[in-house]
Image (cartoon, rainbow, N blue to C red):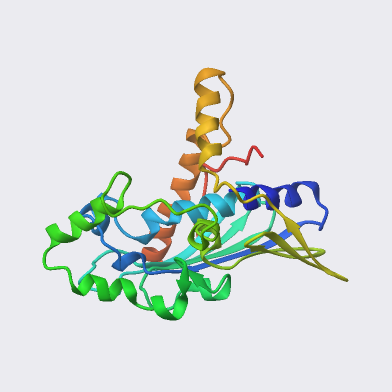
Length: 270
């Protein structure tokens, strides 16, 4: 994601001093959107931590340099009709002493876009409140829900490409779904629709970041270069293994109510 790459540059070049803290909170309607059977089965990788946690942990690990020392977390399964993890709250400590708090709730109550853009899928957050729950009430059977989910995926009859310049296109970036604030010795930085806002010792300034792409074209280009030109991927198998270790630690820490120390972390290559 362009904003994350630019924020990582600020971490690397030290223009605001050392990175000390990251807070990333995301509240959505994930659990009540149409879901397939495996998405609601914890044994098959269902639930918020497995489905949304990789996004959050990859972003936080990238910003912090990748090397997480320990995890303390909880995760919740609060709706018996959707018996998978619907939320998590995670405290991460990096090897260099920086810390991060990572929160995700998919229970379709509060929407954290109210704290960032005030915009949800092209409309106001007020009009979208609990919309996913209301739609789910109209589903007659699990087969109907599976069909709705398939139709929303790539190639599905319900999937529409946003028109260029549309609000949902500009603001649809995953990273803008909740407040992400990075704290340094010399200031705080948050994400904005146009880039990054820096709150320094004496002034506030915005760093524009080109947002005409959401990062997926860059991912495709990286894979192409790795296959055709034998270039090294920024996020390879070892990086994926390290992120998986964090997710496993979230589950273990919640079950055992203790801090989990990690041993398979790798440093960010950017």
